[in-house]
Structure formats: C-alpha cells, structure tokens
Image (cartoon, one colour):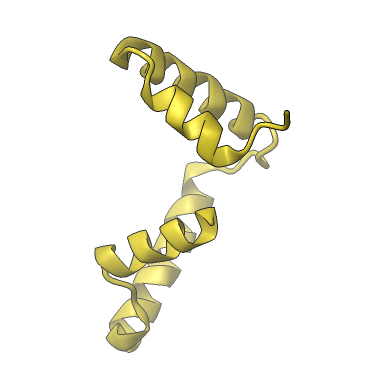
Length: 76
C-alpha cells in the first residue's frame, strides 16, 4: 500500500514529542543538503530587497493567516 503524505503526517503526529523533533531535524538536514551555499551578505541583500518591495506596496504582502492558508492549500 503506498504511503500518502496525510498518512505519514498522522503517523508522525503520533510519535512522542522528542521523536517528532528528531524527525524534523533529520528532514531539515536532508533538505538543506541540496541548497546552494549562500553568504550572509547575499541573504541580507535579498531580505532588504523584499522589505523595500513590501514598503513600496504593502498590499502585495501576505498576512500570517494568508501564508498559512497558502501552505495548507499546497498540502492537499
């Protein structure tokens, strides 16, 4: 039987909190291995650019609730 994301998530939620934390740590480590190496100065420049965009057009920003809705809609 193939495992779905919903089934996997439900199983992971049933783990003790310490095991959930370890699972998250392992997943983040796996995800980060494929990331391009970026220097702090580059990240600061990206953040500054994004902040300037938000200052220029505040309506283009997402609220926390809007972002959570977007994330949850992508899970389905």
